[in-house]
Image (tube, rainbow, N blue to C red; front, side, top):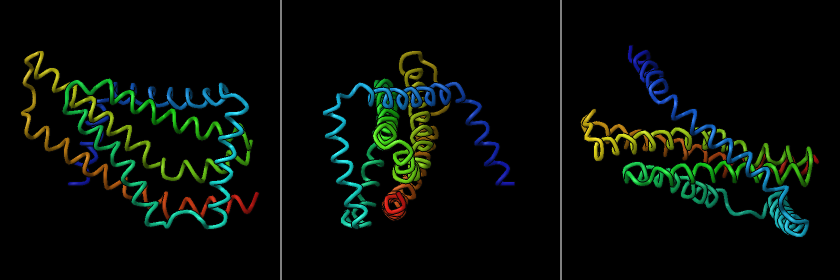
Length: 212
């Protein structure tokens, strides 16, 4: 019974915010496409410099000279949790709506640029490296960022209605509690993503480098 209620809650949430989800997903994909396009606008010197540092990094990974997994985990968690925390804060600030959208677009741009650069410089080898270095943790991080951005945008819009359109709607405290709980759950998923990036991705990168 409880499981069915949870499923209904998820379906109702997605149905209620479907237009925001579509907008957020399209915005993120635009960021990915833009990031991939930016790769082609780089000069040959810029590409060579970036590829040199990238080769150095992959060489260090292959030789096992990267930071300890624990340090990588902490670094990854802090980086991504800052994004989640910023989304949460911007959602309750009313005026943070455009910044939420900009941050999500930039996240998409970073992913698109990273994958696009690897493929541009290394062809199918770059695709394999991007698949094991960028995608594993982002299978969790990207959906969480999209959900967090949607929740933040939705909460911000509700706050705008309350403040400027004088529409009371749902009482503030229960609404804020659900908002806080949702972002707390998001942080738990960020822990899993950080664990993948710290403990699994380096091993996958190392195996791919040795195989190619």
